[in-house]
Length: 196
Ligand SMILES: Nc1ncnc2c1ncn2[C@@H]1O[C@H](COP(=O)(O)OP(=O)(O)OP(=O)(O)O)[C@@H](O)[C@H]1O
Image (cartoon, rainbow, N blue to C red):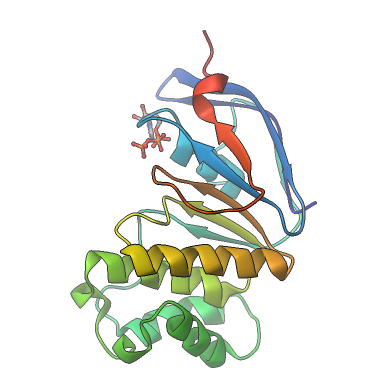
């Protein structure tokens, strides 16, 4: 088991968003969280990441995680390659430079490694966020709307990256508004967990 969510209830701003949410993800497994704006999808990812505490229930992670949110988490003044290297070095794994180069290649940004992050387009920023996740080589991926802003080729690249991560024994929890091909994923419609 890489991630276990047990009977989670989430409250934000004094309001109960969802209750009784349980999920386990083992190696190779994926779950897709769906639901309308404001239902609590990002909040669920933050709970899974340990960034906020559950109102009830528990979260167990047995492996390192990589979290991708709307916030790019890259220093906008640095060149893209250097900004990614900063994070890749933090995880303490070997060969940070090679991992970053591979990740940039996978997301199609290799030729922009020397461009400052602030100059990237919306879709390029999203690809850069995915490169940060790829370079972390963490077993657990938590991806909040990873397809936002990506073109058709970018979506295909994202789908392939997720499939490859699962093949290598990783697990993925993601939220999305758009259709994403994640074969065999558990679908979690949050609307069914809203307390009445
Ligand atoms: N820090 C916070 N304090 C209080 N309320 C919050 C906070 N963060 C989020 N909320 C509220 O929690 C609810 C769920 O927000 P969340 O971002 O999880 O929804 P979402 O399903 O991801 O929405 P979207 O599809 O628009 O991204 C919203 O009503 C939001 O206003």
